[in-house]
Amino acid sequence: MDIFREKNIYFSSIGKFTLGILFAGIGFMMMTFASQNLINNNGLPISMAWIIISIFFLTLGELCVSPIGLSIMAKVAPDLIKNQIIGLWFVASALGNFVAGLIRGNVNIKNIDQLPNIFRQCMWMLFVVALLLFIAKKPS
Image (cartoon, rainbow, N blue to C red; front, top):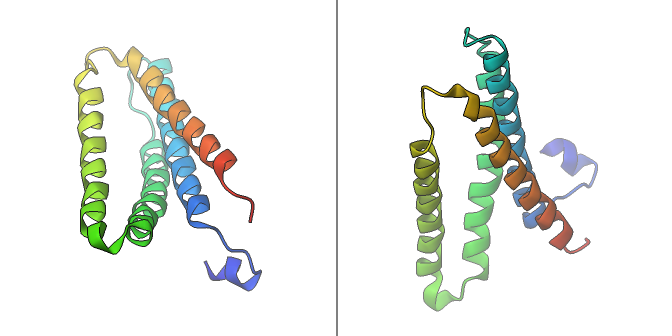
């Protein structure tokens, strides 16, 4: 991030959060392309580059969202309930993992034709959330 600092470019917390969600959306976009490629190849193996690129963007998104969100929770919470608010951040993370498990539970492994649609839905949800956060962000 020294590149940005040298040019006096600073991102707000909500800007970093938005960027993280956008990166996660790009990760799901890569999985959409990969699963569509898998279907077009009649189930033959596809390049591992799709998975690596997807995980790269999902990891970038996680690195932008998780520490920033935790920092925001610690900053805005009143001192009296700061620990509970930080705990709620981790509960929200656990609920997100639970919902991911529910989505996975509805995926039929024998029917790969549904994979592009599932990844596409996740991608568009993340892009819409990123757009809403971008619109809601106060101008600097």
